[in-house]
Length: 79
Image 1 (cartoon, helix red, strand yellow):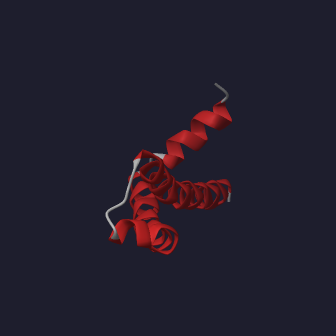
Image 2 (cartoon, rainbow, N blue to C red; image 1 turned 90 degrees about the horizontal axis):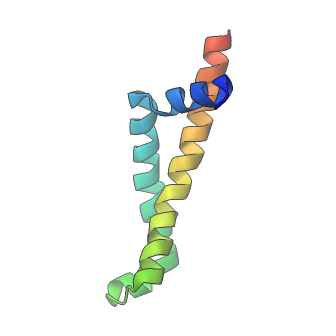
């Protein structure tokens, strides 16, 4: 594994970045889950496929927030 990848993972695991990304995922993921799957959730009609999609609905904003935070932290450390 290259040093750049190791450094990226190290930054992504920083507690402040993990907490920020988790908060973003909770808020954005919940809103998107309600928008995209609200009717199925209200009807309690959630099968494995919908559960997977809901999980991904939370994972995507977590990844995007982590990526943005790591990019910012990398730039700050380079300065």
